[in-house]
Length: 184
Image (cartoon, rainbow, N blue to C red; front, side, top):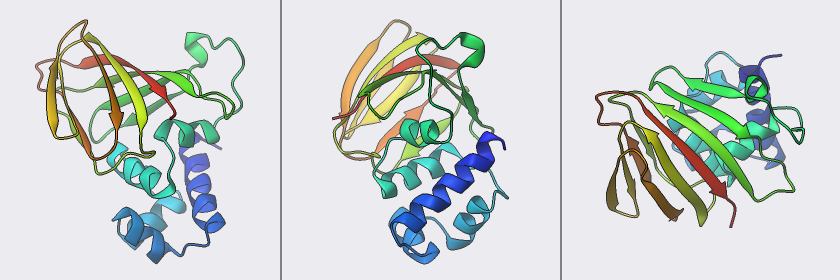
């Protein structure tokens, strides 16, 4: 079973554990019932924005959701064993450098955002989630708490999520960055 199939099964399981119908989850996540149904059946792969909405509805960071569909991580994770997730519609690539574990509060993620990509998140998956974003190459425009930050190579931004956020790559090339995530 591939990661998309495991993700579809986990999303369905989360909804059922809460006793929510597809209609209830659709209302909470502001996603159509038909999209949720197709997602849970594994007929479509979720975009980063869709996963962001579902994670917010379920109150968990995307990294935790993705970790729940992968085997428990060993202490050493070699580069060739680090899980990679791709959103083909936006050109977003996410590598779990240090896959999260339920007993840990922090993790490291490497991300690449294609030139011109724009990913809005309506709400944080967990209020107060702390991020440290370090740009390795390219440029990134990040809006958090109503403030937009223009980040270039070597810049590091620390912030907490309490509302909507937006990641935009103004180009011309891909933006590669490291995101350190710390649970509140």
